[in-house]
Each structure stands twice: as C-alpha cells, then as structure tokens.
Amino acid sequence: MTNETRPLLRVESAQLPLTVQDLGRPGYQHLGIPVSGAMDRYALITGNQLLNNDQGHAALEITLGGVTLTFIEEAVICVTGADLYATLDGEIIPLWQTFKVESGQTLSFERPVKGARAYLCVTGGIDSQTWLGSQSVFEKGQLGRKLTTGDQVYATDKVTEAVVEQQLSPELIPEYTKHMTLRVILSPYAERLSNESLEHFFQVTYTFQKGDRMGCQLHHDQPLIHQTNDNMVSDVVSFGTIQVPASGQPMMLLADRQTTGGYTTVGTVITADHWKCAQLRPGSTIRFQSVSIHDVDQLLQPWKEK
Amino acid sequence: MRFSMYPLGNEAVVVVLGETISPAIHDDVVHHYQMIQQADLHYVTDIVPTYRSIAVYYNWRQTDYDEMTDLIQDILNQDDSSNSSPQRRTIHLPVCYDEALYAPDLAQLAQAHQLTEKEVIERHTAPYYRVYMIGFLPGFPYMGGLDSTLETPRLTTPRAHVPAGSVGIAGAQTGVYPVDSPGGWQIIGHTPIQLYNPESEDPTLIKMGDWLTFQSVTKETYEAIKQDGRIEDFIEEG
Image (cartoon, rainbow over all chains, first blue to last red; front, side):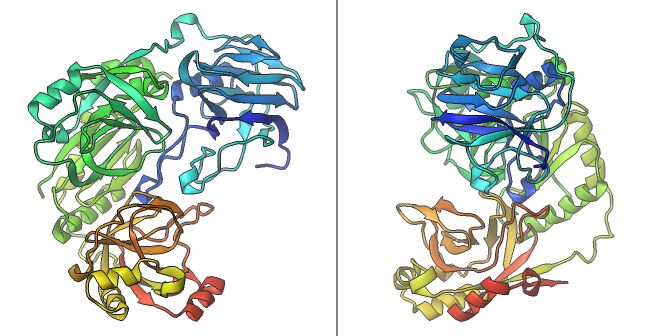
C-alpha cells in the first residue's frame, strides 16, 4: 500500500466471505501456492474495463450476499457478476454499469437472486497489500484475510478517466441460470472409472451441494465406481479439474485449490466455462459435456479478446 | 526418453514420465523439469513438477495445446549431455523431539512399533530424504525414504490445528508443516526454522529436488535457533 491511499469505504457487516481479489498469482504453483484470484474472471475483467481500469485491478468479491458497506469518499463504481439484490441507500442498483456514489451512501448485497459471486470494482482499483505479485487473499497461505465488520477498504490514488453510466451491451451479460452445462476435456485417468460410470458421468444431472473458493462438492444418487480404487500417485490439478474420491461423488476444484492431487480425475472444465463454475450455488444443477482439446480453440475464440 | 503428454484442460500440458513413486522416475522429472525451465518458453506461466509428471501452464490467449506439445517435444528430445552434474542441495533441519512440548504423538508412535522414543528419533534422523514434490500446502514437501519400521497410519481423527513447523509421519511419508493447518499426521517433533515466508519473493525454503535430513536438537538449542538462527547455516550446497 502506498501512503497516498485513502479510505474508500467501511465494512458495516460481512456475514459471508468478502475478500479482495485480482487476477491472482501465477508462477508459484511449483511451491504449492495456488493461483487464487477472482473466481469469475469475466465479471472482474468486465467491471474493470467499464471503468477504464486495467483488467486486473483488484476488486471486492462478494459471496451470496450478507454484506453492507458505507462509502467514506465519493467514487465511481461498477458491480458485475451475480445479482445479489444490491441496493444503494435502499434503491436497487444497475449491474454491469458504472455509476457514482457519494460519501455516506450505503451499498448492500442482500441475498442471491441469480448466481453466487458479485464484484465491486472501483475507479483505479482497491488498494491492499500485495504478496507474490498479487493482492488476492488466500487465507490458508497466510496471504491476507477475509474482511469483517469495521474494516476499512482503500482505493488507490491511480487516476483514471472513469465514465459514468458506461454499460455493457446486454448480449454480453452472462445468464446465471439454475442449470449450467460445463464443457470438459477428458483426463487420461478417466478410464480408472468403470465404463458405465464414465458414461453415466456425462449423462446425468449433478446437484451442487456445497463449496468455497477451494472447490465444490457435487452429488448424484448413483455414485461413480472405480475400476480398482480412487487413489493414484499425485498429479497436477487445475481450476475446473473434477476429482472422484472413493465416495463416487465428484468434486470440482476452483481458484484456491491445491496444486496437486491424488484422487482419480475425470477431466478439467474449459476456461470459457470457468465463470459458470464460479456462479454455482446450493441447488444449482450441472451437466458435463465432453469436448476435444482440438476443438477447444474455436470455443475459446470469443474469450480471447477479453 | 519416453514420455506421454495430455491436456490439463486448455491451460496446461502435462508431461507424464511414469505412474509410480520411484527415485528413477523422479530423477527423470528433475532432469526434464530443468530442461523445460532452461528453454525459457514464451507464454509459460507455471511449471509444476510432481513425483512422476510435469505440468506446463501456458497463456491460452496466446498459444494453444498443439503448439505447446510440439515445443515441449522438441525440447525433451534434444540430446542433453550438459546435465552431467546436477546441483544437489541438502537441508539439515533442526528438530526438537521433546515430547512434552512439541511431540504429542511420539510416545504412542514408539509404543505402537515397540521402540523406545530414542530409537524412533535415531531412525527418523538417520536417512537423507528426497523431496519429490511440493504440494498440499505452500512449501509442504512430499518426501520419500522413511525407515519402514516407522510407517504409521494417519490419526483417526485429524487435528483441527497443527502448528507451522510440526514434523510428522503419515503412512510411508514424513513431512513438515510450513503453515498452520488442520491435519492428520502423527506429530513427533517441531522445527524452529521458518519454512514459509509470504513476504519474500522466494517464499518457501524447501524445493522439489532438495535432500533433507532431520537433526535432533535440545530444547535450549531449539530456542536459540528460534531467536537468531540463520537459515543459511542449515543448507549445504553442492
């Protein structure tokens, strides 16, 4: 943090995880340090772009709601990602659109209407301590902590030409539906499951049970069966890697995942669908679809410009 | 050298050198890891070695799987005779095995193997352990070479809080916790050395490919090292 930073807002209440996130810290996974960063990168990057920020400026990641913030200074902000019933002094605010807030105004994120994670982006980005090239909070690695009642959040002194009422064209706003289809590139270890189980995995609808920034637990009444057992000599795992432990119920790894794992893996969700993984919540339903690495370029093309 | 490759999603190529834990396979991992590192490839963000494989993460906006596998193939197929004398770094980690303070599971573990605590400490401090990989937690070493008479299952109920610096045994593995964490390893000692410093650009002491030995120290030495021990005093380069 620099000396010139100024308090931007105060946390009045945070009942659910509220953290500072940017695009994470690649380059340290060989030391067991995950990349972390915003779970929904599309939402973070888009919010920053609307504010004329760098795409990786840090923002607040709000999970499911339960957060009330009071502005200490006026600012131009943009809220992207999930619809968490966000209000400013009681009035519903537009999402995916920049607007000005005055000192003393209260911004609340009440409850999940659609999706799970929202991003509060501000002009110039949030200022906070940087570890290993990133401001992303990763508590398990002693890299910062969740924000709690009474904490102050700072803005940088970077000057950007924020434009008020800049909004994203509606066709670019993602739809956070209750049901999501996630496209997966198969892992060579998928054949550790029985043939029937592997087919089953791509045919049935899974339910999201619970999850956090590390990963989420999925469920279907018919567990997957391993040919031999669930354990293999550890290999590398990534954002979107689906593991199947002995229970036969898949787990999907996310931003704060371990860097390696020893459970059977079925495959890894393609980058174009990572935002969907970030927006799952209890009750969401999921189907998996297998895609080839050789077809993925076409699927990623629209995302490459982002 | 024989290896296979597979896509870890669309963000990494994994080079697989084997399926088991063995010094020979891991020698290959270390060797190939260095070759890929030295090639200094564009668009590569992380290179992550394990017991038996290496993941090469790339910037998917700028390159793709086919291009990366071609590049990696070229690198690994080069005749590499330059690597005749790889660096070998040994860390002599001081550990206090004082039961009352730092070793809550030592007595029971000794009893389970019908050994004295002194014998457990002797057998634990004797080997040079190979650091196969870092994972599970920041800076956590997966090591091989534990005396088979010390193999002990994990605790049936994991502890909610294992303090950083705890030295433990789980199955055929021994390790040391670099950060506070929940965990089920049997804790038999504690090191005063800081293994993880997130404020540093080089945040973890132990690296894949290192060798590690444990040195039994008294409570007094433990305290002295904790006060003003320098990490460099415990590292042997060569």
